[in-house]
Image 1 (cartoon, rainbow, N blue to C red):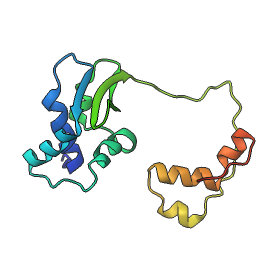
Image 2 (cartoon, rainbow, N blue to C red; image 1 turned 90 degrees about the horizontal axis):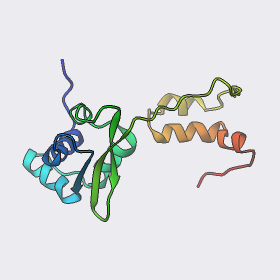
Image 3 (cartoon, rainbow, N blue to C red; image 1 turned 90 degrees about the vertical axis):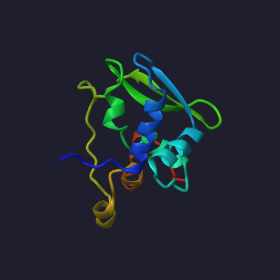
Length: 147
């Protein structure tokens, strides 16, 4: 049974498919296209339109229907392209793997239990773990403070 797409996915998919042509590696669009797509789909606009772009740039993967149209060996990302302008860009797939030649540094997890219990799987949870375990301090060799 397939999972129903959320409103952000439906909106971004509509915007992508509006401008996508086979073989293209850049698909430009404007902030206004997000509003038009939501209206056409009958979806209420979020209060912060920028959150749609932010979500797909930093928090979640693009819908499978968009990923399936990426050229071989590439992934789609969303880049800013000016004020109120963006573009889907097909970029080479980057895989970051630890080197077997580097030493592993074991650090006990000092994250408080209540934080660990309620932390989600997002950037804020990662930042909390970094702070509580002082990982940036340890690996830079200087005391760091969060702002």
